[in-house]
Amino acid sequence: MGIGPSTKETSLHMFRDPLVKVLGEDTDIDFAGIVVVGTPDDNKYKNLVGQRAAAWCEAMRADGVILSADGWGNSHVDYANTFEEIGKRGIPTVGVTFNGVQAKFVVTNKYMDTIVDINKSESGTETEVVGENNVDIIDARKALVFLKLKMRKAK
Image 1: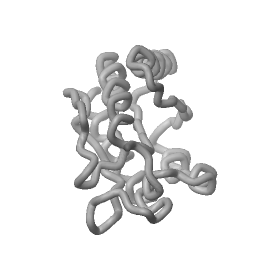
Image 2: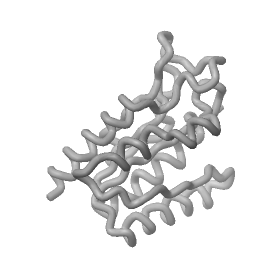
Image 3: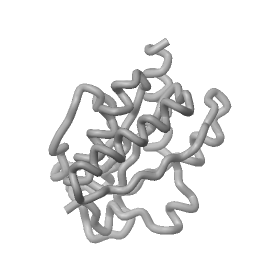
Image 4: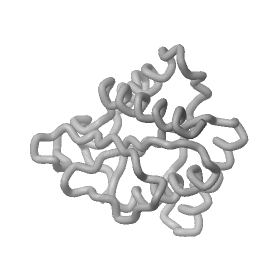
């Protein structure tokens, strides 16, 4: 559980990541960069990666964060922890991940109030079609609009 063919981001997707494209082209924001965080097996490291990612965002003085995950299920444990760690630092955050009908969050917190679901399958399930449920330009634009609204509200 967590990553299947339709939620797996291919190399080509990574080279043409819609979030990077949309954020990089927007003149209203100062796109600072990307932090890549893995999904450890050990719970103590699951918490550590979230704390480190949040500390990095805070040190960069980020006004807002889009937190993206290309997995679901147990991967959402790390995702929720990272959301909480960033949120505790007062940084507005919008999530982008696969939920559909089968991948509801196994844990949540009060900071996970704005999520863009990247499900594209008609059934709302993870499918055998490689890359079917990946972030696209529309998802990226939604996430950016939500983040701008949250950042405006935070000021």
